[in-house]
Image (cartoon, rainbow, N blue to C red; front, side, top):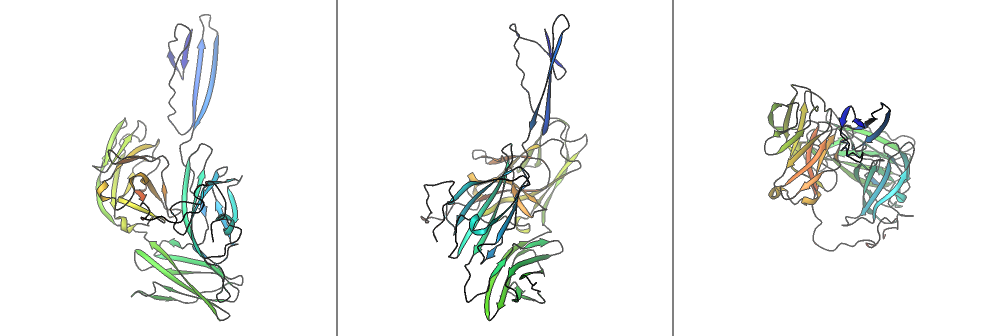
Length: 411
């Protein structure tokens, strides 16, 4: 009896058994062909296909506002088709979520709309509160990607008009677009960087018949900026400030010399002492080069919420795209984590389409050697990020014995 697997001949044991370690070397379909022939020339063949999927889904797209007085506002959420959506929600800076990784199900087209009060697990929001919501998309292979958003809710008042402010949209050319919703007939005015030497009034804001409005501000410098929005309707006023960090021109601190990558199994110190990459055969064509730049972490768009950048930001590029993923190892100095909990470290990349830092699924922290390892499927700005532990004290936690619950938080 003769046996060949994917064109290679293998010897059988005396009892006719065999063992073959099948390495799934590429994303997508991997084919296995077995052909057995006996001494009389009879042939039997079997073909199998296994799909390897280790690529994280696209990060959820969420239109959650940053401020609203409308608990019934519809929040649109979009994930990859056939992916599952999971939510975690914390209130007013609590150390633990009162909604923890709750499944929100699956839709055929990946799109759903949910009112704000349902999203945070309440039938009626009656007190002001800040909610931090993590939206996690999980595909059929178990790969996941998360984004976290914060919304400040303030219940409507007879003395104040309604107001909803959306998350600012940062655009090239040092501009930011601010939009929102208020009452019909309201008058909206705004001020960029109020209370600073760069304070600038925004004129000509048009409120549409349905109460929606939007305007563009010219951002003079890289860094944190704020816009104060004032609304006047029937002698009632309300003011709210929205903040954002603007940068489309990261500052390069150091250019690392280009390196030619051998077309073989090798480790390349892309940034000596800081970042190394394990390259597999076939990752690059012969003669391909890789280069890296070290960016000023204060000059790039900052992470959302409580995440902090640990160390430098690296921008990688190559003369060819990656044919297969590479394993990158990032080194860190525990003495320079600036309060970040080591166990929360992960490798993040900056997505220029969503303007978000997105975590690479499967990041592995080695506290002994002080490294974080992850598989990279493309080149772009990367950085280690993590969160600081909660401040000392015993914050009030709603129903801490219950997880995966949509019970309402205390008002």
